[in-house]
Length: 529
Image 1 (cartoon, rainbow, N blue to C red):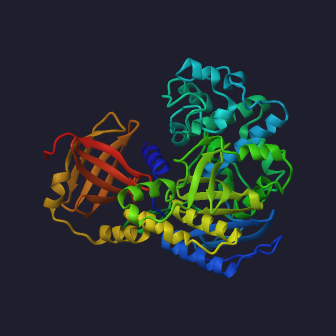
Image 2 (cartoon, one colour; image 1 turned 180 degrees about the vertical axis):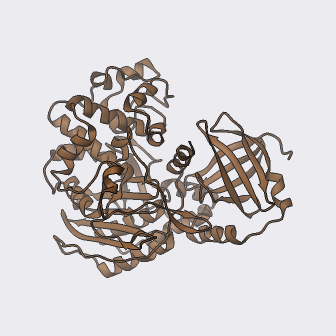
Image 3 (cartoon, rainbow, N blue to C red; image 1 turned 90 degrees about the vertical axis):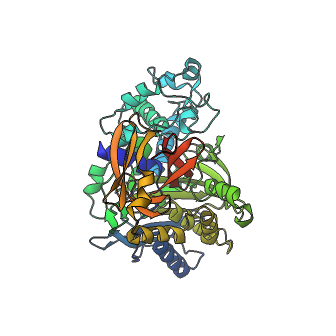
C-alpha cells in the first residue's frame, strides 16, 4: 500500500531530481557530427551538475545517420560504475510510440482499421456513455482522445490486469466525446495493447520484440524489469533525499501497463529507433504510416514538457514583463507522439517518467535528425528539456537563443528555478523553527484525493507530520520547514515536493508546488487551529 501511494504521487507530479559525475565512453560513429562535440560534452556536464543528474545516455542522429552517442556520469552512485552508450535505461512512456508502431503494422496488414470502433476488436469494451462506446475508435486510443480521464491503478498495482482496466473504463468519467479533447491516459494505451494481443494471438511483449525490436537491431532492449535486472550494464533509478543526497530506489514494475511504459533500452539502441522513425532505418512500415503517426491529431497544450508552455503561462500571469518568448509552441498530439514547433521547425517528441528515471526522444523530421536523452534521475524533466532543445538548436545550425537561460527565467518567476530549488534544500537542512511557528498549521483537513481526512501534527517541535491519502491508500510524510507557510517533504511519496499552507476565502488549503502549478491536496474550512 505504501509503495502504491508513493509511486502514484511521484508518477503524477514529478519535480526534482538526483546528482552528478561524468565520464565519456566512445562509440563507433556512422557519420561525422556537424557540431562541436567538446562543447556539447561541456554543456551536458554543466547541466547535469545544475540539475543533480547522476548519469545520462545521449544519442544524436543527423541527416538520417547516427552521428554521436555518449554516456556521461554514473549509472549507480554507490558503485560509480560509468554510463556507456550501451547502458540500459527504463524509457517509461516513450514506450507508447512502440505500441503505436505495432498498431500501424497491423493497419498495413489490413488487420486493423484506425477509424473502426474499438468494440469491433474488443466486444467487451464500454465507456460510461453509450454513444461514446459506439463511436470510440482505434484512432482515438492512439491520440488519447477517447474522453477517458487519467487513472493509474494498473501502474502501481501489479495485480490489476488489462481485463480489469477495460472493465473499469465503463465507469470512468468522460471529459468529452471521442475525438473532442486530449487527455493523456495510460488506459488508452493498455487498451491498444490488448487489441494487438487479440488480433495477433500473441502477447504485446512477444509481438513488440519480434516485429519491432529485433528488426531494428535493438537486441539487448528488454520488456520487463526482471529481464532488465539480468543485464550487466543498467542505469539504476535515483531520487534526491533532502537530508542524505542521491539515493538509489526500486524499479517500477509494469504488468498490465506494459504497452504504456515497459521498454528498457540504451542510447545506442534508441538511436537506431530514431533513424527508423525518420525513414532511414529498416522499412517496417511505409512513409505514409510514419507521417500519420507524426501528424498532430488534436490540440494538446498541456502535453508540452514542464518549463515550456505550462510554466510560461503561469509566469506570464505573474510577471508578464519579465518572461521571455515561448521556446515551444503549437503543441498537438499524434499517435503517441507530441507534435510542436521550435525555432520554426516541426518537432515530434515524447518523454517518459518512471520511478528514478526520465527519458525523451525528439525527432526533427524535416531535417531527418533527432536526439535521445536518457537520465537516471527522477523527475528530470527540465534537465531533459534543456538538453533536447539545445541539441535540436545545434542540429538546426542556430546559436541562439540560450535555452537554459530562458527556461530558468520562466521558472524563476514561479520560484522553481535552480537557484530557488537549491536555496530550499539548504533551508530545509539548516532552518530551526520555534514550535510556535508550526502550531498554526496543525489540525484536520478535508482531503481532496481520499475519503479519509488529512491530519497535520507537530513532531518534536521542529517538523510537521502530514498524514493523508490517495485513492484510499494512506501515507505519512515528514515536512521540514522552509520558513513561513512553506515546507519541503523529506519522505515518500512526496520527497522533494514543496508544500504550502495557503489561506483563502474558503479556508486554508494544503498545496503541492509543481512545475504545472499548485496542486491542491486538502482544505480546512475556517481558520481556527
